[in-house]
Amino acid sequence: MNIPRFDDVQVGDALPPLVLPPINRTTLALYAGASGDHNQVHIDLDFARKSRQPDVFAHGMLSAAYLGRLLTAWVPQSRIRHFSMRFVGITHLGHVPTCSGRIVEKFEADGEQRVRIELLCANQYGEPRLTGEAVVALA
Picture 1 (cartoon, helix red, strand yellow):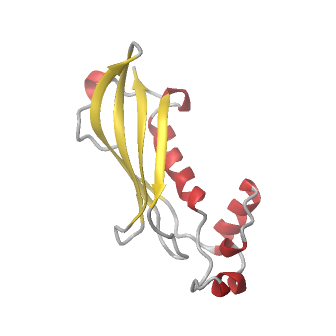
Picture 2: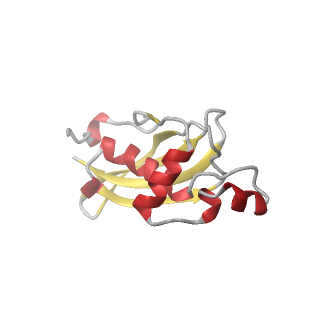
């Protein structure tokens, strides 16, 4: 992997987007098994309806993992200095998650050249599901 160079990126530059397949029941079952998060609202239709939801919906941390994939497709994990997110909406079955990032600041800290990245995971309608921020050290 070629680590982006600090001098080659500018504020406003976008990371290559990550578009995922539509969320389906298989994805939710596989994520529940891999993560150990078997919360019934994500895997049991009857329970979800009793919780006043029309159907099961994606784990918030699944979308968080997608944002992590966006970052680690751009830089190695060892270059990530900060990664935070906020859940702002539910990802329903059939939604197509799209993750994006945009450089909002360039700076130096602790002897490293770093960039601050604004992150977003939205559905196919452009509705934000997660927002976040990351700081990465560049070469």
